Length: 437
Image (cartoon, rainbow, N blue to C red; front, side, top):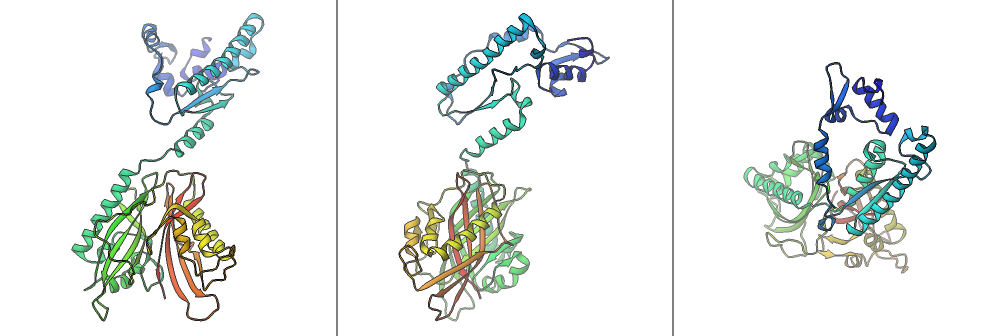
């Protein structure tokens, strides 16, 4: 290093980059080196004795005590390319020493990787080619990509998020009990999808207020309890499902209707949970009323991976593909194919793919050449939808009609909750519908 190389912090920064490869941040340089009033480098911040103590106290890492997933990122030296740029200008014996040291870099890196793999069970090793010791500075993009891939593959602990979702829902139920049905509308995002029986899909409180209060306000009574919650990996999105009791003041006879519901929530920048989609199916059901506090056994698990950059668009495309498969190959086959193994149908309380497929025995099935009695057609609405962290929802309109063209069409709407798979595809875990005009 020449006097010019130590004339200032930036001169030293350029010297290090030219000689060793990495461009050190100025903050790092000032944290480790001293400079005089004229800005010239004068020495290390720490004395050599301190460095000696630190090096002398180093011992083998206790890899056998590591009980969590681990990522090891290494620079992979190239035998035909020097790690240190200044070695290229060496000649004679110095060049031979550089060759020998480069060969040692190659062999020692291989030995280190083998050792870590042996001692650290289940470790994922990423070797970045043609990098160097300061791998974060020399190859930042490759290093960041490796870390993001590793983190995306780790199962998220969604316990706290699910607890927060259920707490938000409990608080909302109390608010409705205290202030009436209008309190529910206050929990909606402005563009939320609201799906209640007898109405089209409504957008936010502005569109939903009049029909919602006409059905659930006044002397009507609607109560519900959550039976399950699923959460995203990023703690920003989640959905709750459960069962309801509804007494409609407009009914000519006093009849309590037992139903089910799905609600999807999004956490805002202020930390508050707000509803982005809500569906109620409270028409008379064949199922007996559910007991308050009852939960779902064998219910779908929360999101465990999150690779998608656009969950909304991807699930809409997946739903459209699902609908096309139902037409081309058969309704039951499609419902089973696009479902997760732990799928639950809340309308008929079926668990898993095969019981779900059996619900459509009267619908077309191409493999068995069954023409069927009914057909179900639907499409997702592109103007609604949201998702984050491996969880998302779609909504849309559906039509059920007889294959022979007789009878009256039944118009419906649906809210489908999707979970991302490790391979980046999406499978639905809950699906519920209600009638529309």
